Amino acid sequence: MSKSVMNALKATAVLVCITVVCVGVLTLCNMFFPKYVPTLDAATAKLINSICPTGTTDEKAFDEDYIVILEEGDYGVKLDDFNKTNKLTKAEILAVYREQKGVHQNAFIVESKSTGRDGDVVILTAYLNDIILGATVKKQGESYWEKLPDDLFAELKGKPFEPIDLNGLVGKTGATLSLSAIERAVNLSNTFAKAIAANVHGYIVDVGGANE
Image 1: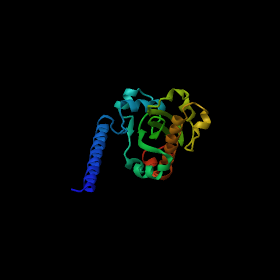
Image 2: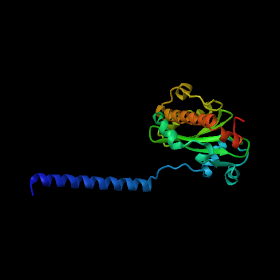
Image 3: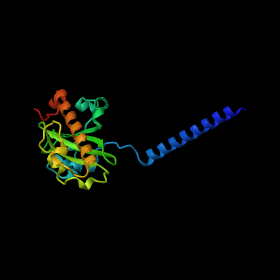
Image 4: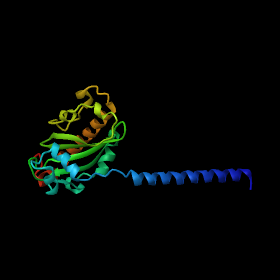
């Protein structure tokens, strides 16, 4: 067997070994660090109840379905298509919830994310009557998070669906990457909320939505 053939076989063997190792690492990562999947659990219902109050306890709001998670058919927009269209925003819409009974009945809550300094920042933003009722963080692991102002999300309350300049509103914080991630997530959420309100009129009428 010639030297060139031996070298080729060795190179192939190395590539196979690298591939096996990479597959193994990815498998382990999926086992121990599974992909984040939005869900309506008690913790999520509690967060939604804090920014879009139902008028009842967190436990009752969750147990008695004051808050529900919507399917794509409920709001008429395909998330994959929407996210692909808005890929350049570096943000993504994950899920939509609705308060189907309670003080803010027919409000809808959009879950969105964007990447900050240390990972994904997931935000919940609630809407009713074409304005933001409130917003909060659902998931984050930012090392500089404590540098953000405590009343950061209060800046969003009452704002319309228009783009928001959080960096301009808040100023320098020392956590620019985290703040920018929040800004991207909220602004894409606003765009999505506007798409529901403007383009999915059947959704708004059928559930007695904010614009009735």
